[in-house]
Image 1 (spheres, rainbow, N blue to C red):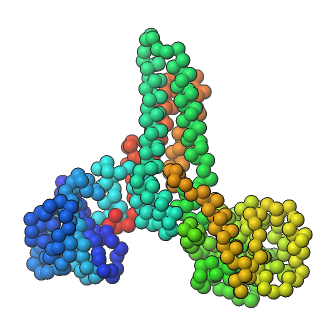
Image 2: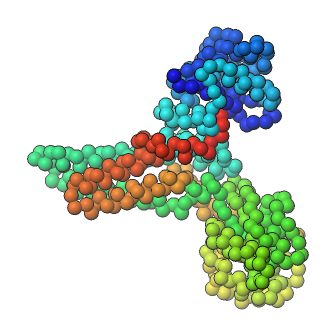
Image 3: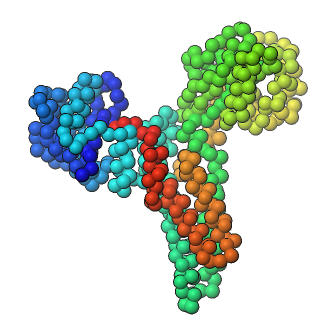
Length: 450
């Protein structure tokens, strides 16, 4: 008999309400033992008292709900107790459940893994659940809801169904060569393959929008020392993330913080000032700054508009993913040749340029609007299903490869084998084929109780 599992499904710590979930063959026994009642009507919340099944002492008073399988989240008999959220209350209830033979604490993600094993959800929906739990912005929430609701899995299932039909046509050609099959059957098969291959290619050529939305767009703030990079980061984060000092070279390491930028997820990266230096520690900071810039999705190049020659030294940093910021606009312009800089080929590559003052706030709103617009364009958030994980992309690359290979296969038998490989690759994404080796990877990031 499978173990009955239990865990706190709400966040740990002091709270007004705590939800404890139980799932498995002994869920009904646990309900009756703790409440001293018979099973209630399904999916109806009842006010109950909970007692220690061994010592008999009162544990708490709260709501209890009974979900008989298979009409439950896990597909098994399940119980939920909605308790007072004190740490001692939750600990006492969980300890009491553990005294019942055959019951044990759940592993991280085990409830959702049960739901997958019971056929309640596929692997993409399971991943959508954890993304929904981890969502920090409205855009991440919307994407996770679509995936948890089956949008991505449904797309891959439709592609898989079409591949199965194509494979069946190949099998007919191979198994019944003497039958009166249409003369153009192979040509029609190749046309269907080409159409599907184009759809997969368009799905893959998404500039990794789904992964960026799930993980956050990385924005590196770069520039020479004392241009105001750390001050800009603190202003955007609305807290003191980085140390600000008049002393050049204060920032020696890469500093990261996460932001909700107009509902979009952003990881902001402050870096050391870019300059030639003989100081070994500062040189390492400069090396890491260059690396952070190379690994970022967007760069914000901060320049002190008064600094002579700064625009020339930093021009190599400007590309189509760079926003140029001329800081300290509250001070006298000074030596920077703005007119010449505006005409430079490097500047023309940039996404835009903003003259601001972090100190006075001048130009900040326009800069934030421009930065938000650049992030939104990069994510291009739509309602269409998009790839959210590297394992999806790897499987789809396999699908595209074998679809292309099948179109030049010298024999129908080889083309049919390519179709089988494509069907299997799509099945790995949703879990419709044997993916036991993938399950630990998929569920390892879940919290306990989900």
